[in-house]
Length: 100
Length: 170
Image (cartoon, rainbow over all chains, first blue to last red; front, top):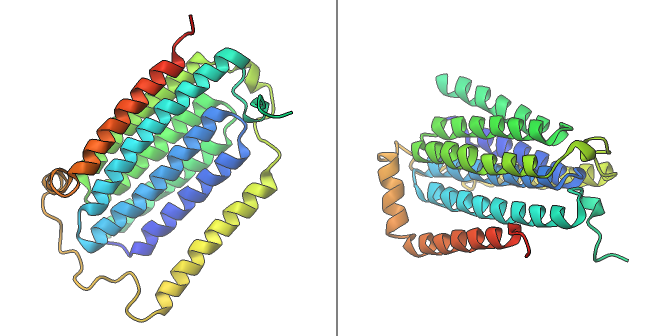
């Protein structure tokens, strides 16, 4: 196995790219995709540590995170469809119904 | 040797795919590059001998979640949105937040390297896990049975919530 730092730096790179995507993109669908990137980066770390310590628990937690990602994507996309039906937009900075 | 070649191959694809995901103008292109990145991550899992997660990643992420994303991209028509600016004016905020996070993790790496006996060096290096799916299943259905059931309730709630929200009001 390669040293654990390789995997940690890969996870860090994917995480930071995902954070930049969440902050800068206006399209809410792409923001949700960036969140998937972030969750994926966490999974890499968990699996790498699971391999390092020879313990399968990290992989079990990665499974739970994948289930969470599925739930989050389903609910988020449902909200986007409902919002698009009302306001005809998917841009984050036009979602200002509560602002005045 | 083969391990490091595979790692760098998949890691490069994953990072390039992630960068293209957040920079492409068209949301469909973003989705395609996200699929590429997720598949490369599945390769990383396989290189880490996590065969079960490799299969789950491909079936669930690429086969399930991404199809959902592409469906929604097709549902909300993006021809109007494509003409508009794709990036909010928050480049500097993003840069500062990213640098802060990276610096935080960098400090963590540096300090774990300094402390004697506190680095990422386990006493007994993993000689190899038992057959992967079997080990995952044993752990999942004995120690983590309650979280497993809670996750199934969570998925049910998410399913009902998604149907209720996407339903047409009558």
